[in-house]
Image (cartoon, rainbow over all chains, first blue to last red; front, side, top):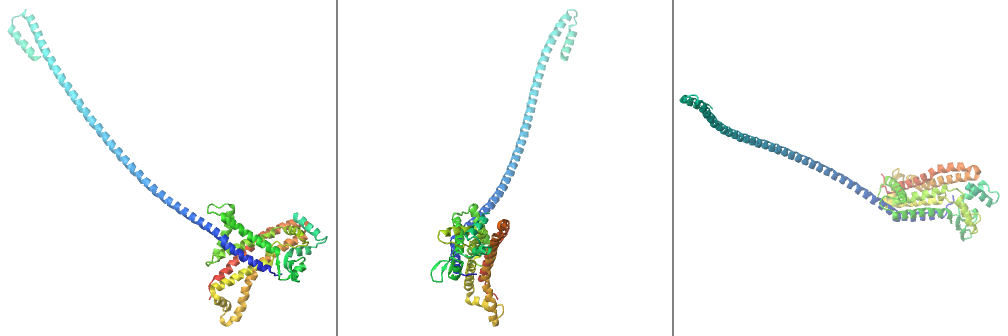
Length: 156
Length: 293
């Protein structure tokens, strides 16, 4: 074991290297690592915040969807009601119209019948008169015939 | 096979008969620059000259690799750090960041006080020692042969060249005693000179046993840097020595053994770097702790 001046050379190098490492090397890496640590922390925080935002948005969208569904349901309901109302009204109107038409037709028929009856009566009178004239040529009991004829005419 | 050829080549170059012992000794000596006994400074040309220099010498090889690896790693880190962004990191940045975070986690587990320079210290120590240990896995003859080749141009014929800095006790103890200095500095800074002294003098027994306490506590304190440095040195030296023995003695059969030992050594290399870093953190944490009662 030969101890020489080398030991001082090595010691001097030791302190110089130590100084160099603490001032020129270590801070570079510790800064970079610190910065990266910060960035990762920020990133994680942002991710957590985004997650929360997403959750809120999902809740809001669910609410809105439910509301929209309810509205749609109520609109459909109203529409259905209105439709059945319109159908009901239409039915009523149609019935009234029908009744009115029927009544009109009936009245016309009545009128027509009366007119026909009147015409018939006149024609029956004429026929009767004609028949009577034919009969008169054979019998003379005109008074009795006349009575018979008026009775006949009254019965028609 | 390249190694074998290198070994044979080296043997041929050092004269026909290079014994295994000479081969190993040669690989365990340093390229030394120092003060010759006659007072002038220069490279040692033989191992004897290197021994004569004694303390007044530098191990140019281990010191060079130590500075090259440590400085290179830090400059590389700074280069990557300059380009680093907080976006998704690319491959290299990710690699450096994972080392950075590994060290940072160890520091936050083991160091309970606020001191922003401890984590950079742990990073420096860990990466530096890891790289120095990894030089162990470069086949033992490659770099010395390159050095000998270059040495030819400078008139250095029998140049030794050691490439694993952590097999030099100067390197490991240089680091561990620097950490020891930091232990003393932070102890006094945080506990005060008196607090630090009383920690040594009044424990584990009361103040009436002060000489005895000092006899226990001072060796304990000194054992920290010595064991820290020698543990690293011992592990790597033993590993390197076994590589040399395999290389020197087994000839053609060295390759499977070399491979098996290298695989085993891959475990030792990061483990020792890790142990050194953890103990550094633990010791400095203790230096920041308040006075124990």
